[in-house]
Length: 335
Image (cartoon, rainbow, N blue to C red; front, side, top):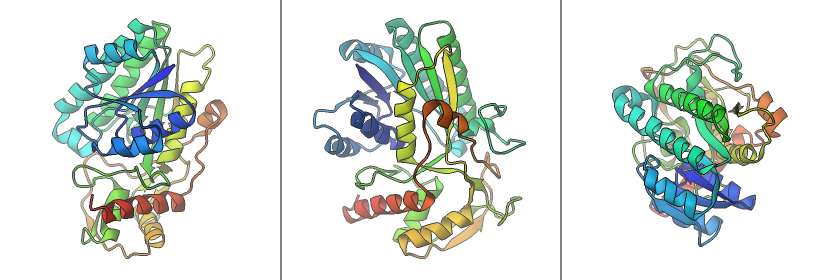
């Protein structure tokens, strides 16, 4: 049987392709390359199999998805394909609603019609918004602060309703802040545009490509005034998706799991750790907060450990070392 991975050329998607192949699952990748580099496919094939099936197409295009499901005997779907920037979603909300919700709805319709047994959805901790209590559990009320977060929550509800009315089971993975890269340095996070996530931006400064890092606010109610996040290695996240495909949900038609480390790290703490990992200075300047940002977020992952048998195993030093090795490899290749 075979897993269809939408957005499989993207950051978390590509690592999940490798993890699923390592678990001896056949994989078909569907990606429109709107937010991924085409040379990732060569790297994926070098890490998995030279005949890895990759199809260029839109996850919202039903005929394409139907054809792939029929041709490759798809029994599970892992859905990554989505626009994913909080500030961008505030500036262009309709694009986010159309792309993120339409693709999920189309995939869910095909999955139900084709009798596909398992649907794993890549969600995000942004659905929690600005919580009143920490750590965040799966029972924390969802209250997104951006159109991006709203689309993720809408998609969760679409899939939960679809599962309740069919034989399809759904696993929703709300993960926190993915960083790191494959230990080979072949795949990792290479944004097509200017880096918006913290760690790629830090690495650009360490490389000397950017003069200084912009720190978005130092007036939060935290130990050093900077925001706190739960950073998790992308390889750990990928392993969580493998566990999500294999889990027996019992009587449940769907389940939600947080994927993080359960440890909060401030921006300044991450910068200090990155200086150690890279051996380079990382100058920074304080700039204004971004719309949609919150002060503090970290996960309670006890449900994932108890039911998925999953726990993040790589610490912040490993995340940053792997991310730096990846960044150095591609800098030397001039890419």
